[in-house]
Image (cartoon, rainbow, N blue to C red; front, top):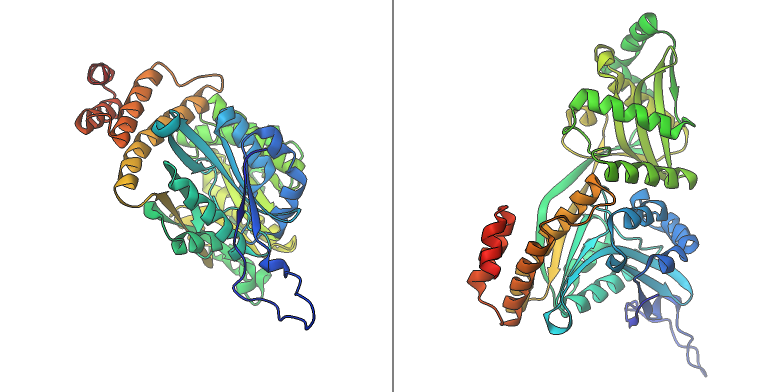
Length: 447
C-alpha cells in the first residue's frame, strides 16, 4: 500500500485517572497513524471505508468521492503519480487527502511536487477529515510538513476558509506558506436561512419572470416538464455538449467536453458518481424536447450545481433561469440543506443565492534559502504538469509531446541550481525559453 508513520495528533486534555489502575487511553488521545497509498489497487481496496468516511466528513463534496478521484487518476495521472494520505485511528479510516505527484531525479537531486488531486477539474480540494476534523487535519498537516523538509513542495488547492485543514496548515510550524491565485467565492443557497423556503423560491421565481416565460414557452412549444433524474445520462450529455458548442463555440464556455480526453473523463466520472447515488442529470423539456440540461452532485444533504446548458434558440424564454428555479425547488423537496452554485462571479447565480463559501489555495515549502530554491523548481514542474494535463485532455492516448525533452532539461537545470551544481542564470534562462515557446534557445542554453 505504501509507507506508514505515527502522528501524534492527540487532544490536549486527558481523562481523569481511576485510583488503583492506570487509565485506558481515550479514543481522542491515541496517536493517529498515517499511511500513504501510492497505487490504484491499494486505493480501490479502500472504496468501502472511503465512502463511509465521505458521508461522515464536514464540507465533503462528490469531488472527494471514489467515483471522482479514482476516475481522475485513471485519466490524468501516470502510475507513479498517486500519493494519497490516509489517516487511521486503530482500524478506522478517519482521513483521506489525495494528491498527484510529479517527480524528477533520484537521491539528493530529486524534486517533487504534490498537487491536490482532481482540483484542475473540480471546485474543491478539501480532504476528508471525518467526525473529528481538527484532530485529523493536524495529522495530515504534520505529514506534509515532514515532506517539505525532504525537497517536496505541496500545492494544497481550494480549501474552505471555514474548514479545519486550512487552519491546521496555518498553525503548523516549520513550513513556509505562500498564497496561490485568488480567493474563490462560491454562491450558495442555504434553505435554512429562509423561514419558508418554498415561499422564498416562489417569490424569486416571479421576480425573475419564470412562471410568465414558462407559460409562453408552453404555448409556443408544448407542455413544459422538469425531469430531475433523467435516466438517459449519456443522451443528456450529448445534448449538453451540443448546446454548449452552439452557444459558446469550440473554445468558449465550460471546458467539460473540450477534447476527447476531457470529455471521456466527464462522462466516466458522472457515470461512476451516478452509480453511487452522488450525481444525476436533469432536463427541462418543452413538448418533449430538452431546452435546458444540468448536472448535480450530491453528498448527504449538500448539493453542488455542477454544470448547466440551455438551447440558445430558446434564450427568449429564459430556460437557464427556469432550470435554476426547478432545480432549487426539487433540491429543497428532496431534503437538501444547501445547494452550492460554484465559484464564479456570474450575476445569474447572485439572483438566487443567500450565502457564500470561500476557498483559498496555498503552496507549502521548506523555510529559508532551501525553500526558495525548491520553489524555483516548483514553477517548472507546474508548467510541465499543466502541459501534460492539457495534452491528455486533448488526446487521452497522447504523451507529453515533442517538447518533453526540453522540459526535462529545464527541470534538470533548476534542480542543479537547488543542489549547487548549476549556474542559476543558465537555469533561469532555460526555464524562461521553454515557457516562452522557444525550443531552439532552450536546447542551446541547456546544451
